[in-house]
Image (cartoon, rainbow, N blue to C red; front, side, top):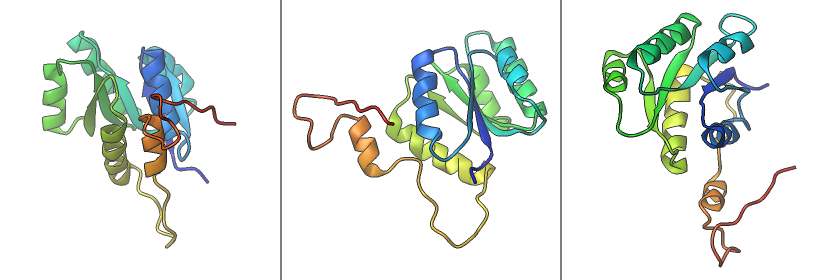
Amino acid sequence: MLPESILIVCSDFVEMAAISCMLSEHHVVVTAHNLDGAMRLLNRPNSCRLAYYEVGDDAEAAREGIHRLGNAGMEVVALFRPPCPQLVCEAAASGRIQGYCQMPICVESFLVQSREIMRRVCPVQNDDRPQPCLLTNEEVQFLLGREAGCKSGPCFRFMD
């Protein structure tokens, strides 16, 4: 059985696909390009426990988005493009968001941060079995183009 759903709200197709790919093996992932679309997708309260939410330049809209997601029962991780908006720093300091992540996504740091946040927000029920990680070290190396078989640069592989 998969853990609770994770919502990704991001206007960038590539970033949203990358985040979704990294999380979807062990979590149900719901994606939307804007907050209104995301709220229409959620068919029941508390259906998603964690939301990765892209914060743009409009601080008031970002504040409202964080508030709406929180009221829907989700913990929020802010996604942003540099420089880091002041709102993100304030929200992290006050505990309104669980963390933040700079875009474009750095695979290694995203995975480390995501594991930590999910341990806090979506605790796995203890059944004394080792829990799988989001990606293995080999998969991370492959995504970074460091696979042993790749001598001419980054390689890509499509999953069945």
